[in-house]
Every structure is written in structure tokens, then in C-alpha cells.
Length: 510
Image (tube, rainbow, N blue to C red; front, side):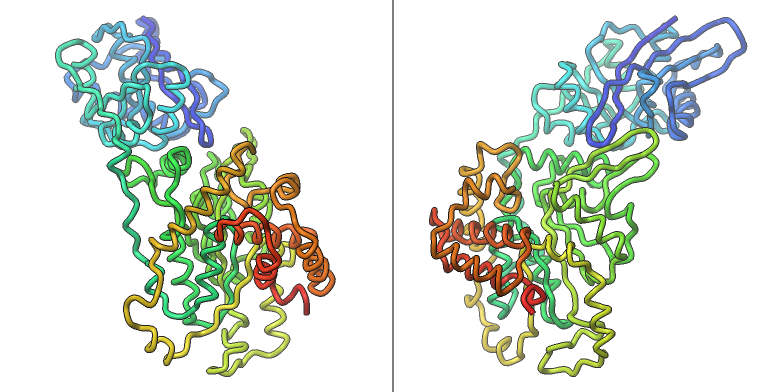
């Protein structure tokens, strides 16, 4: 007898329907074969399914069993096909009768028939809604994640036995309640702006960077507070919109990083070590998975010890920084992952770290300093909007400003940033997929960043004196636009241009 059960395959961030066809024949020797480009985990499903069916109390047919995962040209990976395969065998062997033709089944089986957590559930449920599939049966541990999607009935299943009884009408599994978004909060952060003493210019630069989603490079001696500044950034970024939260959650779901959460409400913060590999940062593998630049999508990618990263790894960042996505090509096809992140890079000014520090003497030779600074290419530096020197804070200043109430906390700064983002959202609402000033191209700059004669004269002088490239020129204008938005004014003024010019690297005009 033949049966068909609907499941799904995740390719990149998207899911595709997969028909799990099971044929049980009395002709030939007993066997169990799975076809349709299965990987090792799918091949091993044969033993898990056999044991799960027996331990559920059902009979495993001693016949010739053929399972086809269609479409056959789509690679299938992971253990999420265990449940639909077991269900197909029970239906084909006439142990289970069901007229459910509009449901999707996902789940990994343990040997005793219980269901285990799987990755990529959110993408599969979103696909089910798009294909007008009415019900989705998922492991109970994945039910909260699946309940984010409205318009689909989610059934949390703890075991094959529970699903068998539900489909046969012996008992009923209650639908998962939709997630109540109004009860969710992202207010708990480990670091707060008020903890940072001194560094007024750095905090101002971070407020501008957060308001316009601009990349930023911090350069200063050890202990100046570069890492603390970077780790405080998520606390002043606006809360993700629902659509952004869905994007982020999809990425973390297929990567297996949700940790029981149903929706990622905080903007991601990724801080890979400088020894990370190309695939670890950019993404890839035989079955391509997102790298850190995609895990930082709509959040922050912090690269400490920036020059210590391998040159080819840093150069690979250039295209994703410009385009907002990365394409991984493999023999079986091409996968595109989103990568709209804020880059925060930190480095010492020299190998010993004390070049220009009045309190410590630099021990590096000029050739060592030059080699160190050349580890990051000019084109890479040109793609960073804000270049900031972070000097060490003197002890007297730390003590003088150590009392409470002298610093703005993250909630206050976040309100400023949110107001600026709201202005950008309103202005850029007609532009496709552009949410912040940093994402504007030449067309949007001409449309939304008109400059007065005084501003143009100042920019022309800066181009001449500071040797700005065309890319740097546009970045100065975009930062000026963000500064104007923070002030709540519609026109860019000369003082906005002047402040933006402060954030260009000294290398531009030496």
C-alpha cells in the first residue's frame, strides 16, 4: 500500500514542501530503503523509526519498504523527517487510518518514540502558511517558536504514541496558543551607558552610529574602554520590529541557537575571536549554514583586535557590508543569507598598544607600526563610517565622575536613537528595503540629503584637504543626515557636516 505525508526541507533560510511517500510491498525480501538525496542523518532514520514504532506498541512491517523524499533533486538533511516517515509507514501498513490531507509533520524521534528538538521550524511554519497548509505538527519543545506565526494551527507533540492516538481519534492534542507579543520585553541588558565614565566623544559617536546604523572603528590603548563601549551598544539600539524579529529568529532557528526562546527580541551581538575561520565568519559548509555576519543580521558584529583577523577573512566582509547579504556557492547550488549588521571594530594603535599614550611609552619600531596598520586594507577602512580614537581615561576623571547621576543611562540614549530612527522610517518608507541612513545609495542621498551652498563649500574644502574618496564623501553626507535627525531638523547644516568630518580617519588627510 502507498501513503503520502507532507514535511519540509530548509534550504538557506527558506523552506520547501517535501512529500514523504511510503510504499510497502509484499514482493521481495524485507528491506528498508530511503531515496531522494538523503544525507547521513536521514539514512540513519531507518533505525530510529524502526525502534520508535516498536516501542510505541505498533508493528514494524517485515516487508519491502521504500521511502521516497520528493522532489528527488533537493538535498535532504537532518533528522526532522523521522516523524513523517514513521507516520507514513503506519498509514501504509494500515495500522493508522486518517483523512488528514492538509497537515505538515516535523520531528526527530528518539528510540522510545519521544520527539526531540529540531532546527528550522519557524521557516517551515512560514512556508506552510504561504502554501495554505492548515495544521503543523511539531515537537512540543518547538511549539513556542512555531506559535509566532498566525494563521496556522500548531499542534505540540511529545511522542509518536500521542500523535497516533490523536490522528486515530482516541485522544485529542490541544492546539498551541498564539504567542502574546504584548507581554514580551527586551529591557534587560548586561551593560548600560551610565557605567562608562568619561569618553564623552565616544558616547556621542556611538549615539550617532546607533541612530543611523553606521559602522564604527575604535582605536585606542588597552584598558581605554573600547570593549565596554561595544558591548553597551545593543542597549541603545531600538527594539527590533516584528518583521526584523522574525528575520533574526529564522536565522537562529536554522542554526540551532534559539535556546528555547520563541522569538528573538534583542538585536544580536556577535563577537567572534580573531582566530575564527572564513566559514565561521561568512558562512558555508557542505550544507551551507549562516556565519557570524548573518547571525549578527539587524544587530552588531564586534571584531576585537581587528588587525589580528586573517586578511582574506576581513576582505570577505567588504561585499556583505555594502550589499547587506552574502551568497555562498556550492556544487549543489547557491544560498543567500542576509547580513545587514553594524560593524564595530576595535584595535590598538600599534602592536604594543601604547602609541600616542601619554602615560605609557611605546616600544614598537616604525616598521612594526607600519606593518601592523597595513594589516587592514584601505578599501576595508573606507567602508567604515566612523573612525574614533578612544584615549585612556585619567584616574582623576574617573574618581571625579564616579558618582551616580552624572551620565545618561541607556534608556535615555535609546529614546534619542528611536526618535531619529522614526524620522528615517517615515522618510524612507517609500524606498524598498531601506530602513536607515547608512543603507542609502547615491539615488537616496541626492533625494533626501540636499545641501546648502555653505555645506557644499565646506565639503569641497574637505575633499581637497582631507583627500576624501567618493565613498568617504557619501559617508560624510549620510552621517550628517543622521546628526540632523538626532537634532530633529529637516535640513543638513554646516555644523552637522563639520561634526561628521571629525569621524574620518587621520590617514585620509596626512
